[in-house]
Image (cartoon, rainbow, N blue to C red; front, side):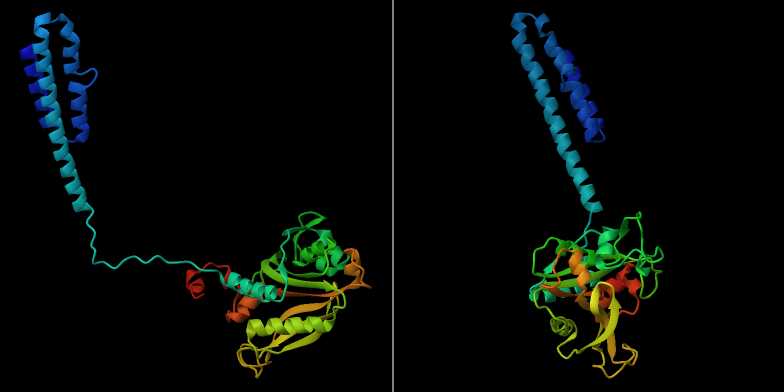
Length: 339
């Protein structure tokens, strides 16, 4: 038995010394010390050893096991240290190199402009309301006094899902939905994405954003509309900004007007930015048509109101002096990081 144990030990030492890595070393440990290992087989054969010799044989087996375990542990520590040294040499970090800066993103110019407009109107007591982008033809046209034969409903101008559903061409349907709730008075703005069948160029896109406002209350007049838009223009473009109202036609307002502001580049003197006119068109507005009020369940004899609409991209282009609307959507980092 002693000779057998010495042979097992010698074989184990040879295998351990020939191991070329931790995986191989573990295989040696299992082969000699595992449940089916050679030493375990010796212990299972103890029943065949005479009773008086068992303590001595057991001691020899334990000494052999301890010797093999000790050698395996020492070899493992050496291998791990060697692997660590190799890894440290391969993963050298030059602490003198400049650090990599994390680029922090920021809001899109459209978002910056929208938040500024919202801030202005919230400061005047308005609430921000949103609605669906896929809208019923009724809310997008009929309820806004745009009948079935109106040119705005032409398929060349509007994206139709079917004969009753369209991609909204304006955010005015949100105003109608709000009026139908019957909770008066109303002071709201409705920002959102709209869709029109336009060709893409420097000033047009099939998808863009609008911000429309609505006020419904008793005794609301055109003077209230003018005062509101004057305050808005001054907050957005500067305290010296003046506004000019030009008569216009919109089916859902009467009277209606286009609004110009004095050029904030030249102060109204005329420059390249305003094409020498001194004025820049920014939005359309008017008093809500009595028929629109009636269709939404509001008595035009008791209530009146005004509405206005401005293109979000229009504001961004003017405020940041961008001459091509497509730049806002091309995701060119060289352009966007300027903001």
